Length: 265
Ligand code: KIV
Image 1 (cartoon, rainbow, N blue to C red):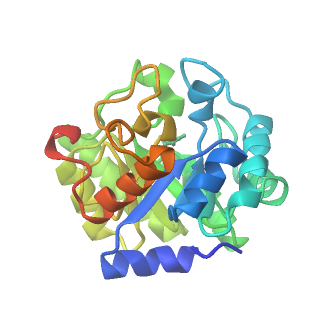
Image 2 (cartoon, rainbow, N blue to C red):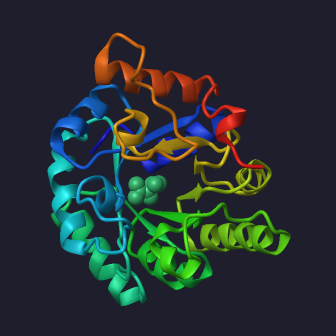
């Protein structure tokens, strides 16, 4: 069992201690993040772009996710390990149970993440009944890129913003232990964070979330094209990758990251 637990994340929200999360897809980076005491390591399906070179996360399979989660998990002594459920891997409670079981039993994940709003209520309720911690992913859902027609900020229009807030409440009621919001306006992320008892994690969602996540390669400045809400924490500091990670952690804790320029309004 890692030092960081779901209970500890809840306590961090209650005490206003910002939660740090970074992605890792292999043992070397996972060890480094764990040693720097990143609270949560996410084996995200972003590995489809970062590791596999695809232009979306759609091609990522359950076998890919299990493989990468499995090679990261032995390194998670301190950090809670969050495993991502990929495209079309949780379209029914039965399938969600099957694939969350794979991520936890074969991969060693401590918690699973799934994209989707109210369509995931039954799946989250079923996982919760069986003792599986779940992080719901709202706002921009990259697995829906072909439906959306691109990667855009979500919730600028009032109707969509109301739906995101309502979905967050419904998913919390269904048992979600954490809600991740991607690319939503600051005011909406603040509203959701204030309305929920469980922690929120933002990526392109402003400083008011209970924590922040970035894709590791984006924050090291080595992605082909890092998003505007990210930051290169490596360039210009002397302690290499460990220093960049420490810099990310202290910036999130001090709420100097994200800056206004890295937020959407
Ligand atoms: O897959 C991933 O890395 C993610 C983050 C972008 C939050 O879902």
